[in-house]
Length: 53
Image (cartoon, rainbow, N blue to C red; front, side):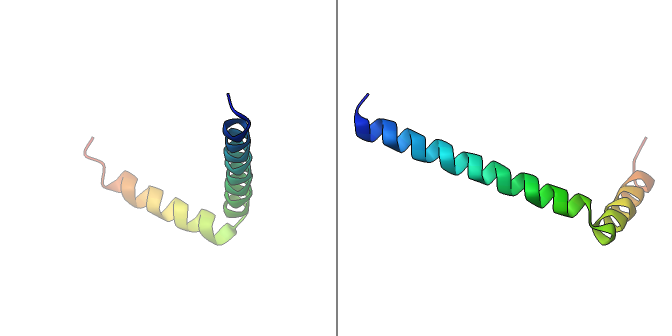
């Protein structure tokens, strides 16, 4: 493997890790938002009411 290929792979791995960290932070923020939790519960309730079985 060339040095440039190794550097490219390291940069891509670092970017992926940063993206995962941002996604975890976003998920935690959303989970802690009472308005979002209420909306999710309302959607879930509506979907349950529309189930065919």
